[in-house]
Amino acid sequence: MPSARIPPEVQGTAADVRKRLDARLLVVKSLWFPTPRELRAWDQSGVPLYLRWLGPHQFEIGPWLASMWASAFSPVWRGEIIAEGERARLSWRRTWTALTWGVLIAWWIVVIGWAGALIVVVGGGQESPWWVLWWGLLALSTTAGPAVGWRFGGRALDAQHDWLEVAAADPLVDGEDW
Image 1 (tube, rainbow, N blue to C red):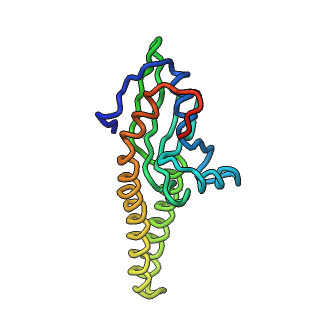
Image 2 (cartoon, helix red, strand yellow; image 1 turned 90 degrees about the horizontal axis):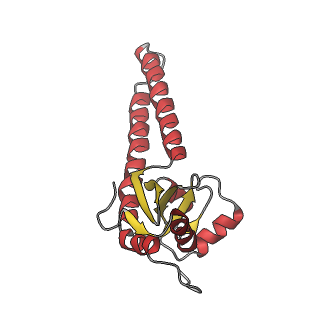
């Protein structure tokens, strides 16, 4: 959900906004499969947000956390830069990355399917009922973990609204170092 503090419209063309974001945020190609260079840059970066381009004008912006893996389970602002002449409009929403959604959905399907099979086996007296309790705890933890990531990663993301507003809207100055 967009913040009222980040202007939906900024001065400059879509290309200008893209250059600003590239210059001021940590650009990565993948959180799940980073290159050694991206891992080094992640460890050395002092910027609070990372940027991942999904297309020429589509992006994901997420919080820089101590670990890329923690950031993978944090929400992102997925959006696009919409060109409107000499101005650009930013449109975005809060979500997980597409790969994070895929991993979570696949895991929940496995957990629920396996739990269903386990209930049949336990109901038939072939296994101990303790397995149902164990599987229930596994299902709870695999739901609670991403919920914690959403909450605390979301706080880290939301804390950077003002920083992102400046990064997206202020014109680039030669020699600036973010």
